[in-house]
Image (spheres, rainbow, N blue to C red):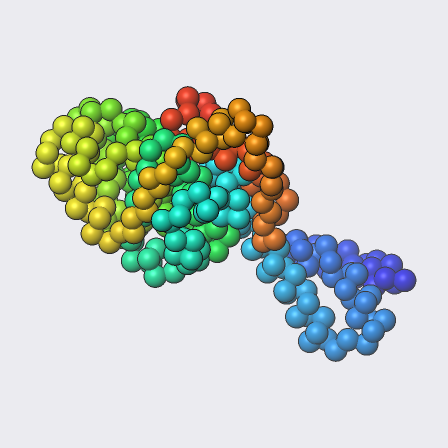
Length: 299
């Protein structure tokens, strides 16, 4: 017989008090753990410790689930299913070290990922973001054009500064597909405002098809180009993925009957359904995908 069955009046009172204290996990588990403690002769301290540990673990699980939902990461992209063998110049050890976060995020350092379309830039950046969220950092993954349009609207409504301040809650913002930004004074000026606002305070991860030498096509003002590059590069790690497109290679393999076997990534620290995982066959860089094909992780 459980503690709740032996003393239903006290059980109801305990549940009410635990609800008032906002301890839902302890409220759910205390009766069962109390019965186990009675049966096994636990000391009171052990019972209290077990209840508190369960409460904290559940809070952490819910927090990570919330942060994964708001991060809007690409579904199915993890470091486990990133094909490092296809990018021999990319250091797997270096990427995994950065996935732990730490000093580079605390210092507001940046990451710049260059490479042609289809080489895994979006996969790598989303996977890095996923690993960071699991480590407790807050991340936002967004197409550059989408965020720039939101900041343009904020400027028109005279609320650009509050909008930039709101983005400070993210330790890392991933700006995907920088090269697809149009050479428009309004767009590039708010992008420059974002880069300047986060400089040495909060981190940016930028993916781009074009090297710095071609960025004068993005910023209409040469001085703004130099200033933007200077702020991004000052404290930055550069990854170059100058390899054959995944999509092109995959198409050739399928043409010759050598399709890649599907593999799945899982995360022991992530609640079921927090970040949907799809087969390895779907690993594509979103840099040259049509609008609407950039999926967001579902909580």
